[in-house]
Amino acid sequence: MFKVVSSEPSEFNLEDMIRTGVRKMLVTALEAEVTEYIEKFISRVLPPYLRSSAKVESFVLTTT
Image (cartoon, rainbow, N blue to C red; front, top):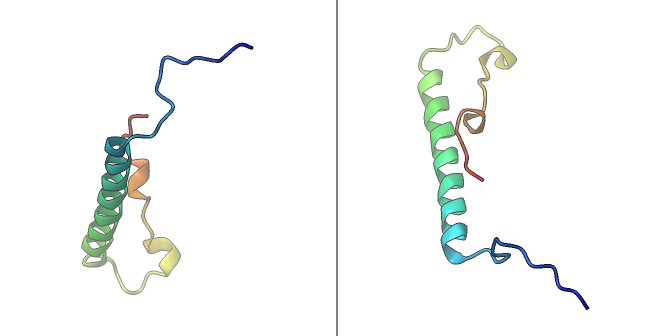
């Protein structure tokens, strides 16, 4: 029988798992910090749907 061989390793190694976890933690921390910072300058008169901001993930470049 034939085997499919790829040039990329199919295993998800420990370093990749750590890198992914750290990236998620940074995104979460940045979102919290941005939300806290923006809350200082938001008028309390505005309804909540006008106070929301874009997710940090849309601005963070990822390399996959």
